[in-house]
Length: 304
Image 1 (tube, rainbow, N blue to C red):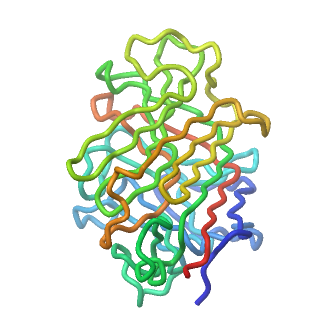
Image 2: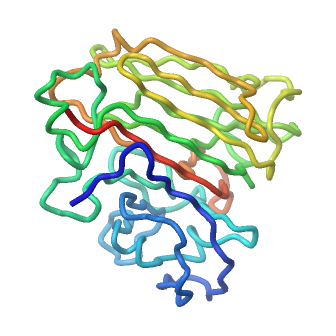
């Protein structure tokens, strides 16, 4: 098997496709998908098989052109639409819905388990050498170009308008969760990220553009709905950096030191996530979050 390292990009560029509601399909267009999805897995806010769990789509199914006109489908302008309503099936250990890609470095090889230190996941370069050699990659960079199309406008004031658009997830916690938030009376949205710390578990938030407060002013430098922008998440050893880009230029950047965050432990492992993770469970059932991704690139150093 092969793994994806520094030069391999996941570029989202899709033609539009019309499908009836409440079905999923393999796209008959031979050019779909025109990018590699071999190392991504998709979690959905549906339970179509009635097993009491949210549905998931494997790397192989995605690479073979799987789409769903409810939650994951080609946009008219060459991207992939991710949509998650307030009401829907949820993955384990969360009370929020999501339509979100989960990095899978095993690329369909089920010999490697999904959730363990090993070839499906990656580690920080601060991990001991024996754990770096076992991993699917070392350190990581995630770049995305996207537009947030819709956020929730109903529900509790502490949750309205929030969506997570990118993450580094560890075994139990998240070294980074990148949020977009637009309040109903605002023109522009704010961006900020959370960093969770192990032992004891805690978290803190770091601003990028605007303010995450429920009573924040409309951010003059924020990003409105439907505007394309980019983000870059880079983890290099104990250093974590998040950039926000407009028209290819960095307009916001913040860094944190993870040396005391507890992620170099032997049992830890990392994986990227990208899409829409709805952060409102109090809104109207049919309220939703939606974003269109145009580019997504994940990179890692080779294990050594």
